Each structure stands twice: as C-alpha cells, then as structure tokens.
Length: 517
Image 1 (tube, rainbow, N blue to C red):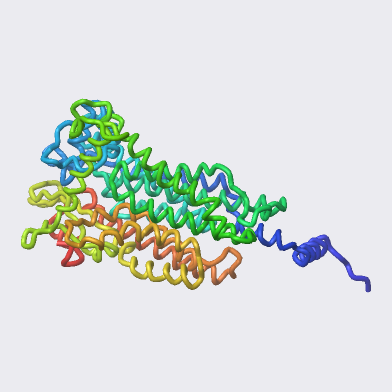
Image 2: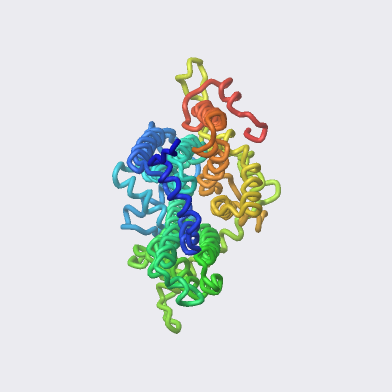
C-alpha cells in the first residue's frame, strides 16, 4: 500500500531539515532575538488603555479629600506651598522656609502645573501626582509584557499596581516621591528598550556576516533609548537626589548587558568590545546627559535674581561662573541639612522607621487623622489616611527577593536580575547611615519593581502556553486566587487609603499589626 504524504508531513520534514542544517550564525541570531513578542499588539493596547483609564479613575476619585481645613496634610505642607510660590515667581523659590528648600526644583514645578490649572486646592496640588501615578500603570503593563512576552501577565501587573496601597496613596499626595518613582520607571522602560535594540542591531550584523570584522565586534551607532534613559535619570535627580542610586544601578546593568549581547553574537572579545565600544558612550549617556538635564531643570533659578542662595557667590573663579558656584554652595548647604537630619534619641518622629522594616511595610505612616467626622452611621467617626502597602503584595517581598536571587545566580535569568537590581537600588543605600531620619514613603520608587518581582514568578506558576490543559488550568487557578486576594485586600484597606469616614471599630479592624498603630 503506497504511503500518503500530506502537506503537513512535508512542512514538518522541511522544518526538521532546516533545524539540522541551521548555521551557527543563525543559532546566534536566534539567541540574540530571544522569544518573539506576542502577536496581539492591538488587543494588548486595548487592555493597556482600559486598565490605565480604570486606574486613573481610582486615583482621581475625590482627589481633593482629605485636607486640613483646606490646607495640605503631612509633608504636602512643604511641597504644595513651595509649588505655589514657584507659580507666583515663574518657576523658582525665593523664601528659604527655614531652610526646607532642600530638594531640586522639578517635582515642585510639576506640582505647580496642577495648581495653575485648578488653583491652590487639594485638586490643584495633587493633580500632577495622580496623573503620573496613572501613567505608571500604562508603563508597568508594557514592561511586564516585554519581560514575560505575555499580554495576560502585563494586565496582571497593571492590576497589581492599581491595588498597591503605597502607590495609590502617594499618587494622591503632593509629595516628590511619586514624581521620582515615575521618572525611575520611565528610565527602566528605556533601559529595556535599549537592550532589545542592541540585540537587534547585533542580529543584523550576524545575519549579514560582518559581526567579527573587528575582534571587539561592531559599533552600534547612536542609541536613542540609552540617551532617553539618561534624560529620565537626570529628571529623577532633578526631583530628588536619590535618583543617583538608579544611575549607578542602571549603568552597571547596561555594561553587563552590552558584554553579554556581544558574547551571544559570537564576538571574539565581547567584554573588551563592550568596554571599548560601549562604555565611553554609555558614560556620556548615563553621566553627562543626566548632569546636563539636572542643570537645565534649574533654568528658572539661574534666570532669577532673588532665588534661594542665587547670589551666594558673586565672583568668578577659574572657568566657573558665579551662578554655578552659587548652585554648588546651595547644594552644599542642602547636603549638610540631609547629613544632620538624624534621629535624636528619645525624640524620634512617631512614624519614623528603618529600612529593614520597609520590604514588608511593617511600619506604615499616618498622613491624616480626624476623630470628629460624621457620616459613618454613628455619633463619632474617624477619617484617616495611612500610607500602607497592600499586605498581600508587600508581605511576600522577602520570598520574592530570595527567589529572584536564585533565578539570577543559578539560572542566569536576566529578567529577575534587572528587576531585583532596580528594587534593591531603592532599598540598600538607606542602610549606609542608619542614624538618619527615615520614613516608609522612601520606598515609593521601589513599589513598581515589587510588582514586577511578583509578576515574574506568577508567570512561572501560570505555566507556558504550550503546557497541558490541566497544568495550565491549575496555574491559572492559583494566579487568579492570588490576584483576587490582592484586590480584596485593597478593597478592605480602601477607607484608610482615602480618608473615608468610618467607625472607630472599623478603624481598629484596619490595623492588623501592633506596629501599624
């Protein structure tokens, strides 16, 4: 009986033959490219926009509440007032305010935009933070999709970010930390895009056969994403100096990624090539560009005559003009302020905490309290706003760190390494000077990386798309139960994240740990 050869059999034979005859160059090209992005581009953007709109509605609802008799609450009293002063002056501060003008101007200038739109109201000084917090939802969805090659996991990342109590509260406060978090996450977006671009360019060199025209590999041309990463980091530093931590962390990652990409492309001397071909331009992009962007954000101060310490120095010295020397002196005064902002024994701030409590959010912060409100159905009600990380997300932080370390070292998984380095860049530097006054809101920029650190193992639990029905179904059930737990946890905390009027009994029920009181 003759054998019937179907079209499917013929295609399978062709694929098998291609696999056998695949050239080393093709292997390298495939290794550089990695797994392709999902083909559902339109659907992914629909999901991204829908979740961003939902997150924006959650951030913006009743944004003007709470206030302290119409004035800012907690540390808003510094930044909302300074932003209003900038709005009056055209972008700079001229009242030292007991020397509390101790941060660069960009974050306060952005807050001033909201005050320009809506006036000196809660909506005015909180609008830009809420907008930036909403845009972070969009970015986290696209980042998670790029890291996992899964639109579903990208959507889960967006949902987790919406339900994070820290980012929710900080998106509704006129403070600088959400602005810093936004620019750090934007820099991470460009860092990942640069990694993919480098590998795409090397793949072209491999395919066309000129990757080893030089032992150190090809020059890669101007890298716009690396440049934009540097711009974002400069904007982060122009908000708070702690942006420097991510300059160091992202710069280190970029060097490692450049060397490993050249190695994957088959370059004879990959690390020498990364140092000779990429490092100098990398220093320009991640050091010089941020410095120039940082100085540019002081434009209003340079143009002023009455800005804080603007004429601290009025004489030329060598090639440095008086304005730059005045800014240097001003910065030295600010540095001195931060160095002496230490905890006085017996006089600690009520809500001060140390960095070993931050990963799990063991010591949150009370931003607002009013025990005389009404509207809860009883004669005496409570309105409180507390900065607290959603426990279903923050309590697994230490296992997340441990699992990421194992994946990074034992499995050389670059995705876990990228997320963990970005997360630890916002945590570890605070252990250097434990005498300094510290507060839980310093963890705001790490919250997005906590989300990514949770989404990556959720992807492993979910399983591959080609896994069996039962394996995939079980994984989907576990992931769904966890996401449902996070949403339920966030809904339970809702009243104390938004300052809603609740009974004293409900207030006590919200405080799960003694350290929360």
